[in-house]
Each structure stands twice: as C-alpha cells, then as structure tokens.
Length: 452
Image (tube, rainbow, N blue to C red; front, side):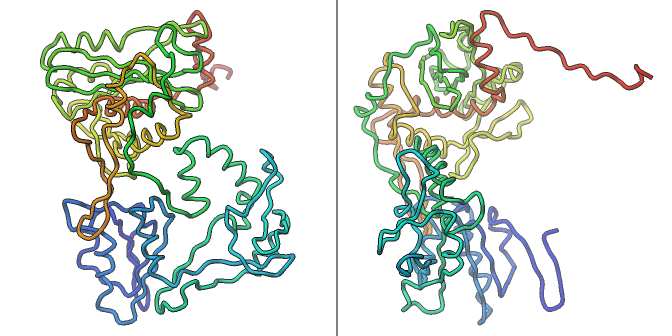
C-alpha cells in the first residue's frame, strides 16, 4: 500500500516519525506534508526535514514541495521555508476600486456580535464587499511575489478567507472566531487552521502574584453548581503522594477545588489505603445531588510497581497509571502498553501548554482561594523555552530554579484523566440534580424467533 512502481518511476510513502524510513532512499521529487507536525528525534539522527532533503542531493533537477499548517512561530518549519522564498500572496481585486489586496482577517468587519453582517473592507477605498459577492473577486485573483529578487524558490501563502467552500463563508468564520476567542486553547487552532498563521506569544514566565486574580471561594462542600465532572491527578514522591482535585464544567472550564498531601512513602501500604479513601469520597453537589471522583491518573514514573499494584484492581473506577511522553503533538491521553496493568500515555508537553495558556487568559480556569501562594508558585514553576538542537529550534519545558512543580504535574494528570470520562454533560447534569442516582433502563434486544 505504501509503495508503487509505474512506467518511468515509482512512488513511496514514508512516515517522518522515524528517521530510519529515510535511509537508503533517493528521490528526484520530494513532497513533504504537515511539516510543523514533525518532531525532532533528539536521541536519533536529528531533524527529519534535513534528512529528507539529503535524499534528493544526487539529482540536478530535483523538486522539493513542502506544505503545512503553521503551528508555533518559534519552531515553525514551514514559516522558515516561506521566509526564504519569494513569499507569494493571493491578491484579489476590489469590486469597487479595482485595487488588488490580500484578504486579511484585520479587514473583515461585522456589527457588534452579529456574524451575519460580516464583510470585507477594502484597505484602499474602504468599500464593503459581502460574502455573497466574493466569488467574482476571488476568481479574478492572482499570485504576487513580495520578494521577486528571490529566484528558484517559490513560496505560497493563502488562508480560509480566500476559499469558496460553504464552511469558509465569512459569517461562519466570524461565528467560529467569536466562540474560539474565549480561550487560547480554542483560539490557537483557529488561528493556525483558518488564518494560516503561527501562534505567537509563548514562553514568558508567569508571575505567581498575577495568578491570585484567578482565586475564587471554591470548595468541595458543596461542589460548585457548574462543575459536572471531578478528576484527580496523583504525583508520587519519595516520602508522600500529592493529589489535585479538579472540576470540569460542561464547556470544560477548569475549577481547581483542592490539593492534598498524603504523607508516607509509596512502599508503605498505609499510604495507598489513605489515597484509596481520598479517591472514594462522595461530595454534596450544589445542584442537590451527590458527586464522586470520576477518574484519576497516577504518575508511574516513580515506584511503578506500587502504582501498578494500586491501579490494577481499580481500572473499572477509571483509576489508571500514567506515564508522561514528550512531544507537543501528542494527545492528552492515549492507551499505552504494559504487561502489568492498563497504562495511559500522557502528553505532558501540550497539557502544560494548555495550563499556561489558561492561566494567562484567565476566563477558563479558577483556583480555590484556600490554596496558598506556595500552590500558585508551583503552578508557575516551569517556563517554555526554545533551545537549538543540531541547528534546529526545539521547544522544551524548563524548571525555574528554586521552585517545585508538583501542583503543575498533578493538575496536568487531572486534565488527562478528563479524557477517560465519556458521559455526556447533559446526563451528568441530570444525575447531580437528583437526590437519588438516576436509574438506567437496561437495553433489551428482542430476538426475531420470539415472535415467530
């Protein structure tokens, strides 16, 4: 399926995830897709983009075609390649003055919060063009090289604003923007995929004093009315377990409700008994019913055997062992392999990035005010930095000197544990508003022969 031979040549499809795929291959035409989703193999041969380009070295008439949705400005491969090109943009003529312009988001206007009023304002004459009038303008467009002095390297940039697809109508894109802008977690993919622009502004330190604005009078007695799901994240240390209890709303906003320290070494059975009691608690919900901890992830990077022994008989309660894996394109939680128990692979890099973005933006996370300054300092204990690795920028998390990061880790595990809950929010809202558990009618399938 991945290799085809035909008269005059052959086609081979390989994954950039493993540099071994690029060994012993030569190609006159090299097509590279979604470059910004590639990860550098820090322990292997280096950047797969460089390795792939070397496979074309023996051909004088080689062609290299690269395309990608940009992701992060500091590490974007496609942005670096575009910056080296003649930087072509798609320009369209204004239907009123005839001047050519690239359609940019800054020129899309609408009235208040009414997406249906979205129009494009010409930068030259200011005249408005409605979405229903854009087809002739787009079809009359042209590519213009903004750096014509560059020869032999074409670069093309275009975004969804210049698309005629129904889902790329300007009113629909405005509606998506109004929904996505509420949180950096949703705004970033919108900027990447709709505008075709890299995300900017990551990496600066968080000031713990600024996080005090996120503290609210939250508690577990009762569980706040907007909280529908409860998860826990557990970090194992040499002399203690640290646990964070997080609540999630229907929109997946986070409420950090509690953080506890269970003193005792992981090799002591009493420590795990106390953790089991902590995770087995029931809470009174402000809606009138009861709430329970729905799922938990326990870090197995330290004292793995003890963690496996604890989680193995509790898998049905969605209490699982977790192992952090690096890479900013990892899912928050994925099924792993272990001969001893169910093991969840935790994408710690994107989860920490999500936490930092939520803390900066502020509207999608709240922290209980009984958690002191030490807790806030632990949340801000790491910063995102960019280091050069074999000539290429690589992002990584760096612990700030003098700080502890248990609170950051346990909140990350609690966020990963949210992925284990498949119940619809509407169903849970019904449960927590009832003083008694909601009964579920068994599904009965009637065999045809019963009515024969």
